[in-house]
Image 1 (tube, rainbow, N blue to C red):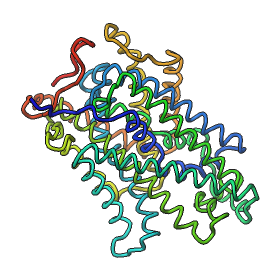
Image 2 (tube, rainbow, N blue to C red; image 1 turned 180 degrees about the vertical axis):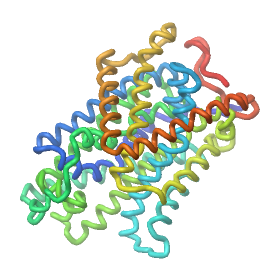
Image 3 (cartoon, rainbow, N blue to C red; image 1 turned 180 degrees about the horizontal axis):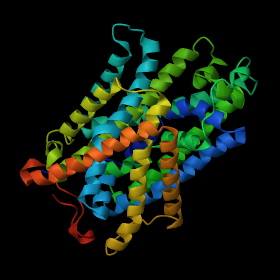
Image 4 (tube, rainbow, N blue to C red; image 1 turned 90 degrees about the vertical axis):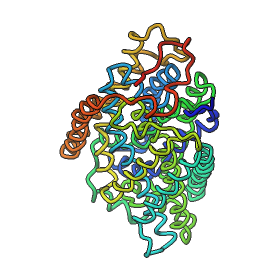
Length: 459
């Protein structure tokens, strides 16, 4: 009988590229000036980016344990359902499917469109058309087949790493001469609180948990999930520290703080005539790599929700012909297109999802502890390094960042909270409708042998 669910086709190289490709987006370029304004020294700047990497790694350790123990499709959705019940998994899937994931895709698509518009200069298309086109094309590529999506991801990630290296080389050639005319303007924009700057740094590192969403498609998941997370974080950290060091060396702290186009100004020190085009193309690649990775991994969340909740049963179908969750991909792409026209500034967009994202990060990290007690008989191929301290540190950071984001933009946090709360009556409605019948969802619930532990969550 042919397998109609996820197939283990992703190698260690593929999964590492997926993590690096999703994390290394345009966020580091957009966040760099904001972070520079929030810190008081160059050492503080580099230190904050290093702290962000270490905190992200603490969170990644927990996800690595969960992903290797329960290598199923859906990531947080699976872990939250196991730890707290169906309602918790539903709320996560609800907010991710309808708001967070389409919003993340739309943000990166807008970044791509903004820089692509400067290169192609086609007024009849415009930025909205470019953003919609990017989402549509990458959604189709990933719907046609997982290998095609992975090939695109690998190519874009390789170009990203090469592009980041180019910026560092050009900054080294430019030397550390001060940039005239920018220091005096550094005080025009009020600096962000340090806690908000940390949110932006962690947002730029966001994506290390994406491995959990494709765990059912990773070859030798017991070994490769942990390896990919650690290797991916190491590569991203090296890239981010190198990029910020390059900006700092070329523009100085005050120059970074005052900059409105930090990468362009850095490259312009060596290639003044071509800086705009070079940086625009580089940012386009950064953004497209993030969009493709978000599209590929994000549809697996709504697919997992659709397996277990009849309200989303239409999304829980795995196409035997393409080997992908086609319906989930199409719905995700359509929602991203709708949200493209409703996005605000970079900081406000991050704040819109920050409280919800860190709330679920917190709940999933606590689930590491809960499931060690509840599923003590389940074999854990990997256990959190530094447990319980690394897990507790990450949980504490999540609490602090939730509070900081709510205090900084309370009305945005309130809107996000309202959408989460709407998931409560939606869950009750879904439970009244009933759970999906096997015929309504395609694909096995899990590829784990029964001997590894209790059966996975079933509808």
